[in-house]
Image (cartoon, rainbow, N blue to C red; front, side, top):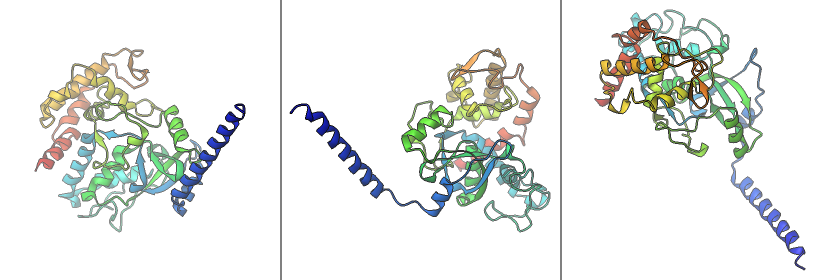
Amino acid sequence: MHAAFPRVAAALALSFASMAWARDAAVAPALSARQQALMATVVGSAAQPRILQVSLDELHPTQPAIGYDQVYYKLGRYAAEEKHIADIAKPKKFADLCEANGQGDVLSGTASVAGATLSAPPAGYRCKAAVGSRPDDMKTVVIGPRGTVYLTDGHHTFSTFRDADGGRNAQLKVWVKVSDNFSALDEAAFWTRMRAQNKVWLKNGRNQAITPQQLPSAIGLKFLGDDPYRSLVYFTRDVGYEPPGHATEFLEFYWADWLRGKPAPDLAHTDLLDRAAYANAILQAAQAMAALRPGDIVSGGKRAAELGALDKVDRATLEELTQDKGKLSYAIAYRKSLAH
Protein backbone atom coordinates (compact mmCIF):
# COMPACT_ATOMS: atom_id res chain seq x y z
CA MET A 1 0.00 0.00 0.00
CA HIS A 2 2.75 2.41 0.93
CA ALA A 3 4.59 1.58 -2.33
CA ALA A 4 1.71 3.15 -4.26
CA PHE A 5 2.10 6.51 -2.50
CA PRO A 6 5.01 7.76 -4.70
CA ARG A 7 3.05 6.89 -7.85
CA VAL A 8 -0.03 8.66 -6.56
CA ALA A 9 2.00 11.68 -5.49
CA ALA A 10 3.70 11.85 -8.89
CA ALA A 11 0.37 11.59 -10.66
CA LEU A 12 -1.07 14.37 -8.51
CA ALA A 13 1.97 16.56 -9.11
CA LEU A 14 1.66 16.03 -12.85
CA SER A 15 -2.03 16.81 -12.69
CA PHE A 16 -1.43 20.03 -10.73
CA ALA A 17 1.36 21.04 -13.14
CA SER A 18 -0.95 20.47 -16.10
CA MET A 19 -3.64 22.52 -14.41
CA ALA A 20 -1.17 25.33 -13.70
CA TRP A 21 0.04 25.29 -17.30
CA ALA A 22 -3.53 25.39 -18.59
CA ARG A 23 -4.33 28.25 -16.20
CA ASP A 24 -1.26 30.24 -17.27
CA ALA A 25 -1.99 29.59 -20.93
CA ALA A 26 -5.55 30.79 -20.41
CA VAL A 27 -4.40 33.91 -18.55
CA ALA A 28 -1.69 34.90 -21.05
CA PRO A 29 -3.12 37.16 -23.74
CA ALA A 30 -3.17 35.87 -27.28
CA LEU A 31 -0.19 36.80 -29.40
CA SER A 32 -0.75 39.77 -31.68
CA ALA A 33 0.17 39.65 -35.37
CA ARG A 34 3.16 41.86 -34.57
CA GLN A 35 4.39 39.49 -31.86
CA GLN A 36 4.02 36.51 -34.17
CA ALA A 37 5.95 38.30 -36.91
CA LEU A 38 8.74 39.19 -34.50
CA MET A 39 8.96 35.62 -33.23
CA ALA A 40 9.30 34.44 -36.84
CA THR A 41 12.23 36.79 -37.52
CA VAL A 42 15.14 34.95 -39.12
CA VAL A 43 18.58 36.00 -37.89
CA GLY A 44 21.11 36.90 -40.56
CA SER A 45 24.89 36.69 -40.49
CA ALA A 46 27.67 39.11 -39.61
CA ALA A 47 28.22 39.70 -43.32
CA GLN A 48 24.50 40.08 -44.06
CA PRO A 49 22.71 41.00 -40.84
CA ARG A 50 18.95 40.87 -40.54
CA ILE A 51 17.64 44.39 -40.01
CA LEU A 52 14.30 45.20 -38.48
CA GLN A 53 12.24 48.36 -38.09
CA VAL A 54 10.87 48.96 -34.60
CA SER A 55 9.38 51.87 -32.69
CA LEU A 56 11.26 53.19 -29.67
CA ASP A 57 8.45 52.18 -27.33
CA GLU A 58 8.86 48.54 -28.41
CA LEU A 59 12.42 48.41 -27.09
CA HIS A 60 13.04 46.78 -23.70
CA PRO A 61 16.34 47.55 -21.91
CA THR A 62 18.87 44.91 -20.95
CA GLN A 63 20.52 47.23 -18.42
CA PRO A 64 18.90 49.22 -15.60
CA ALA A 65 20.94 52.42 -15.89
CA ILE A 66 22.70 54.73 -18.31
CA GLY A 67 25.00 57.71 -17.91
CA TYR A 68 22.62 60.66 -17.90
CA ASP A 69 25.35 63.15 -18.80
CA GLN A 70 25.99 61.32 -22.06
CA VAL A 71 22.33 61.84 -22.97
CA TYR A 72 22.43 65.40 -21.63
CA TYR A 73 25.33 66.20 -23.98
CA LYS A 74 23.26 65.20 -27.01
CA LEU A 75 20.06 66.87 -25.80
CA GLY A 76 22.03 70.02 -24.97
CA ARG A 77 23.62 70.10 -28.40
CA TYR A 78 20.31 69.44 -30.16
CA ALA A 79 18.71 72.31 -28.23
CA ALA A 80 21.58 74.69 -28.94
CA GLU A 81 21.48 73.95 -32.66
CA GLU A 82 17.71 74.43 -32.82
CA LYS A 83 18.19 78.11 -31.93
CA HIS A 84 19.92 78.75 -35.26
CA ILE A 85 19.00 75.63 -37.21
CA ALA A 86 18.96 77.41 -40.59
CA ASP A 87 22.70 77.97 -40.24
CA ILE A 88 23.46 74.32 -39.39
CA ALA A 89 24.28 72.35 -42.54
CA LYS A 90 24.01 68.98 -40.80
CA PRO A 91 21.89 69.15 -37.60
CA LYS A 92 23.34 66.72 -35.10
CA LYS A 93 20.07 64.98 -34.23
CA PHE A 94 19.37 64.09 -37.85
CA ALA A 95 22.99 63.08 -38.41
CA ASP A 96 22.66 60.76 -35.41
CA LEU A 97 19.42 59.27 -36.77
CA CYS A 98 21.02 58.58 -40.16
CA GLU A 99 23.98 56.93 -38.49
CA ALA A 100 21.86 54.77 -36.19
CA ASN A 101 19.87 53.53 -39.20
CA GLY A 102 23.09 52.52 -40.96
CA GLN A 103 22.76 55.34 -43.48
CA GLY A 104 25.93 57.29 -42.82
CA ASP A 105 25.60 61.05 -42.41
CA VAL A 106 22.69 63.39 -43.12
CA LEU A 107 22.85 65.16 -46.48
CA SER A 108 23.86 68.78 -46.04
CA GLY A 109 20.98 71.25 -46.04
CA THR A 110 18.17 68.68 -46.08
CA ALA A 111 17.21 68.92 -42.41
CA SER A 112 17.89 72.55 -41.47
CA VAL A 113 14.29 73.41 -40.68
CA ALA A 114 13.19 75.03 -37.42
CA GLY A 115 10.82 72.95 -35.31
CA ALA A 116 11.41 69.73 -37.23
CA THR A 117 11.39 66.66 -34.98
CA LEU A 118 12.88 63.22 -35.42
CA SER A 119 9.36 61.82 -35.70
CA ALA A 120 8.32 64.51 -38.17
CA PRO A 121 11.44 65.38 -40.16
CA PRO A 122 11.53 67.97 -42.95
CA ALA A 123 10.09 66.82 -46.27
CA GLY A 124 13.48 67.08 -47.91
CA TYR A 125 15.37 65.19 -45.20
CA ARG A 126 17.80 62.68 -46.69
CA CYS A 127 20.70 60.51 -45.55
CA LYS A 128 23.78 59.72 -47.63
CA ALA A 129 23.07 56.00 -47.99
CA ALA A 130 20.25 53.48 -47.90
CA VAL A 131 19.05 51.93 -44.64
CA GLY A 132 21.46 49.26 -43.42
CA SER A 133 24.27 50.22 -45.78
CA ARG A 134 26.61 50.61 -42.81
CA PRO A 135 25.55 47.83 -40.43
CA ASP A 136 28.54 48.33 -38.11
CA ASP A 137 26.97 51.64 -37.01
CA MET A 138 23.62 50.07 -36.17
CA LYS A 139 22.32 49.02 -32.75
CA THR A 140 21.42 45.44 -31.88
CA VAL A 141 18.40 43.63 -30.46
CA VAL A 142 17.44 40.12 -29.35
CA ILE A 143 13.94 38.73 -29.89
CA GLY A 144 12.72 37.23 -26.62
CA PRO A 145 9.67 35.24 -25.46
CA ARG A 146 6.34 36.42 -26.91
CA GLY A 147 8.24 38.50 -29.46
CA THR A 148 9.54 41.03 -26.94
CA VAL A 149 12.34 43.14 -28.45
CA TYR A 150 15.31 43.49 -26.10
CA LEU A 151 17.85 46.20 -26.89
CA THR A 152 21.40 44.97 -26.27
CA ASP A 153 23.29 47.98 -27.63
CA GLY A 154 22.20 51.59 -28.09
CA HIS A 155 20.49 52.48 -24.80
CA HIS A 156 22.02 55.97 -24.78
CA THR A 157 21.36 56.73 -28.44
CA PHE A 158 17.75 55.61 -28.44
CA SER A 159 17.02 57.14 -25.02
CA THR A 160 18.32 60.42 -26.45
CA PHE A 161 16.01 60.09 -29.44
CA ARG A 162 13.05 59.35 -27.19
CA ASP A 163 13.69 62.36 -24.94
CA ALA A 164 14.53 64.77 -27.74
CA ASP A 165 11.96 67.21 -29.13
CA GLY A 166 10.23 67.54 -25.77
CA GLY A 167 9.77 63.79 -25.37
CA ARG A 168 7.52 63.41 -28.42
CA ASN A 169 9.38 60.55 -30.09
CA ALA A 170 8.14 57.39 -28.34
CA GLN A 171 6.65 56.21 -31.63
CA LEU A 172 9.74 57.03 -33.68
CA LYS A 173 10.62 54.20 -36.07
CA VAL A 174 14.27 53.14 -36.14
CA TRP A 175 16.19 50.31 -37.80
CA VAL A 176 18.15 47.77 -35.75
CA LYS A 177 20.14 44.57 -36.29
CA VAL A 178 18.76 41.29 -34.93
CA SER A 179 21.64 39.41 -33.32
CA ASP A 180 19.60 36.51 -31.92
CA ASN A 181 16.08 35.11 -31.80
CA PHE A 182 15.48 33.34 -28.48
CA SER A 183 11.69 33.59 -28.65
CA ALA A 184 11.26 29.81 -28.45
CA LEU A 185 12.65 29.80 -24.89
CA ASP A 186 10.58 30.30 -21.77
CA GLU A 187 11.37 33.25 -19.50
CA ALA A 188 13.76 31.38 -17.18
CA ALA A 189 15.69 29.76 -20.04
CA PHE A 190 15.77 33.06 -21.92
CA TRP A 191 17.47 34.95 -19.10
CA THR A 192 19.85 32.06 -18.49
CA ARG A 193 20.89 32.30 -22.15
CA MET A 194 21.17 36.09 -21.99
CA ARG A 195 23.46 35.88 -18.96
CA ALA A 196 25.57 33.14 -20.54
CA GLN A 197 26.11 35.23 -23.67
CA ASN A 198 26.78 38.47 -21.76
CA LYS A 199 23.77 40.21 -23.29
CA VAL A 200 22.35 41.62 -20.05
CA TRP A 201 23.85 43.85 -17.34
CA LEU A 202 22.23 43.17 -13.97
CA LYS A 203 23.70 45.94 -11.80
CA ASN A 204 22.00 49.25 -11.13
CA GLY A 205 23.56 52.71 -11.11
CA ARG A 206 24.88 52.13 -7.58
CA ASN A 207 26.49 48.83 -8.60
CA GLN A 208 23.88 46.77 -6.74
CA ALA A 209 22.78 43.45 -8.24
CA ILE A 210 19.25 43.20 -9.61
CA THR A 211 17.13 40.44 -11.17
CA PRO A 212 15.90 40.45 -14.77
CA GLN A 213 12.42 41.16 -13.43
CA GLN A 214 13.73 44.45 -11.99
CA LEU A 215 14.89 45.77 -15.35
CA PRO A 216 12.97 48.87 -16.47
CA SER A 217 10.08 48.40 -18.88
CA ALA A 218 11.26 50.98 -21.42
CA ILE A 219 14.17 53.14 -22.51
CA GLY A 220 14.48 56.87 -21.80
CA LEU A 221 15.42 59.06 -18.86
CA LYS A 222 12.03 58.52 -17.23
CA PHE A 223 12.61 54.79 -16.98
CA LEU A 224 16.37 54.14 -16.78
CA GLY A 225 18.41 55.03 -13.71
CA ASP A 226 21.56 57.15 -13.68
CA ASP A 227 25.11 55.85 -13.26
CA PRO A 228 27.42 58.88 -13.01
CA TYR A 229 30.50 56.67 -13.41
CA ARG A 230 29.12 55.42 -16.72
CA SER A 231 28.97 59.08 -17.82
CA LEU A 232 32.55 59.55 -16.65
CA VAL A 233 33.68 56.62 -18.79
CA TYR A 234 31.92 58.14 -21.81
CA PHE A 235 33.96 61.30 -21.42
CA THR A 236 37.22 59.37 -21.00
CA ARG A 237 36.76 57.67 -24.37
CA ASP A 238 39.79 58.43 -26.56
CA VAL A 239 41.34 60.19 -23.55
CA GLY A 240 42.15 57.20 -21.33
CA TYR A 241 40.82 54.27 -23.37
CA GLU A 242 39.75 53.45 -26.92
CA PRO A 243 37.26 50.62 -27.56
CA PRO A 244 39.04 47.84 -29.47
CA GLY A 245 37.56 46.15 -32.51
CA HIS A 246 34.87 43.62 -31.56
CA ALA A 247 34.78 45.04 -28.04
CA THR A 248 33.06 43.08 -25.28
CA GLU A 249 29.45 43.92 -24.52
CA PHE A 250 29.00 46.50 -21.74
CA LEU A 251 32.65 47.52 -22.00
CA GLU A 252 31.96 50.92 -20.43
CA PHE A 253 30.30 49.35 -17.39
CA TYR A 254 33.41 47.31 -16.62
CA TRP A 255 35.40 50.54 -16.56
CA ALA A 256 32.68 52.24 -14.48
CA ASP A 257 32.75 49.42 -11.91
CA TRP A 258 36.50 49.75 -11.61
CA LEU A 259 36.51 53.55 -11.29
CA ARG A 260 33.77 53.41 -8.66
CA GLY A 261 36.13 51.51 -6.39
CA LYS A 262 39.03 53.95 -6.80
CA PRO A 263 39.67 56.68 -4.21
CA ALA A 264 39.91 59.22 -7.05
CA PRO A 265 37.95 60.47 -8.80
CA ASP A 266 35.26 60.58 -6.13
CA LEU A 267 32.13 61.74 -7.94
CA ALA A 268 30.12 61.93 -4.72
CA HIS A 269 32.30 64.88 -3.73
CA THR A 270 32.72 66.44 -7.17
CA ASP A 271 30.65 69.41 -8.33
CA LEU A 272 29.40 68.06 -11.66
CA LEU A 273 28.01 71.49 -12.55
CA ASP A 274 31.52 72.96 -12.43
CA ARG A 275 33.38 72.38 -15.69
CA ALA A 276 36.86 72.57 -14.15
CA ALA A 277 35.96 70.11 -11.37
CA TYR A 278 34.33 67.69 -13.81
CA ALA A 279 37.28 67.98 -16.22
CA ASN A 280 39.67 67.17 -13.37
CA ALA A 281 37.65 64.03 -12.57
CA ILE A 282 37.91 62.97 -16.23
CA LEU A 283 41.67 63.55 -16.14
CA GLN A 284 42.06 61.51 -12.93
CA ALA A 285 40.06 58.65 -14.45
CA ALA A 286 42.10 58.71 -17.67
CA GLN A 287 45.37 58.78 -15.75
CA ALA A 288 44.30 55.73 -13.76
CA MET A 289 43.43 53.90 -16.99
CA ALA A 290 46.71 54.79 -18.67
CA ALA A 291 48.69 53.64 -15.62
CA LEU A 292 47.46 50.06 -16.04
CA ARG A 293 49.55 47.35 -17.63
CA PRO A 294 47.89 45.45 -20.52
CA GLY A 295 47.42 42.30 -18.43
CA ASP A 296 45.98 44.01 -15.35
CA ILE A 297 42.48 42.88 -14.40
CA VAL A 298 39.99 45.76 -14.43
CA SER A 299 36.58 44.26 -13.60
CA GLY A 300 34.66 41.07 -14.25
CA GLY A 301 37.84 39.27 -15.25
CA LYS A 302 38.43 41.69 -18.13
CA ARG A 303 42.00 42.85 -18.71
CA ALA A 304 43.06 46.42 -19.45
CA ALA A 305 44.07 45.52 -23.02
CA GLU A 306 40.66 43.92 -23.67
CA LEU A 307 38.97 47.14 -22.58
CA GLY A 308 41.18 49.35 -24.72
CA ALA A 309 43.29 51.14 -22.11
CA LEU A 310 45.67 53.67 -23.69
CA ASP A 311 49.30 53.84 -22.62
CA LYS A 312 49.11 57.60 -22.07
CA VAL A 313 46.45 60.25 -21.61
CA ASP A 314 45.40 62.02 -24.81
CA ARG A 315 45.35 65.58 -23.53
CA ALA A 316 44.41 67.07 -26.91
CA THR A 317 41.15 65.11 -26.90
CA LEU A 318 40.53 66.12 -23.29
CA GLU A 319 41.01 69.77 -24.18
CA GLU A 320 38.58 69.47 -27.09
CA LEU A 321 36.06 67.77 -24.81
CA THR A 322 36.12 70.58 -22.26
CA GLN A 323 36.16 73.64 -24.54
CA ASP A 324 33.14 75.95 -24.85
CA LYS A 325 31.46 73.81 -27.53
CA GLY A 326 32.79 70.51 -26.27
CA LYS A 327 30.71 67.56 -25.13
CA LEU A 328 31.21 68.28 -21.45
CA SER A 329 30.09 71.90 -21.82
CA TYR A 330 26.88 70.90 -23.59
CA ALA A 331 26.15 68.30 -20.90
CA ILE A 332 26.67 70.76 -18.04
CA ALA A 333 24.62 73.47 -19.74
CA TYR A 334 21.73 71.04 -20.22
CA ARG A 335 22.01 69.79 -16.62
CA LYS A 336 21.82 73.40 -15.43
CA SER A 337 18.78 74.09 -17.61
CA LEU A 338 16.90 71.30 -15.82
CA ALA A 339 17.31 73.15 -12.53
CA HIS A 340 15.39 76.06 -14.00
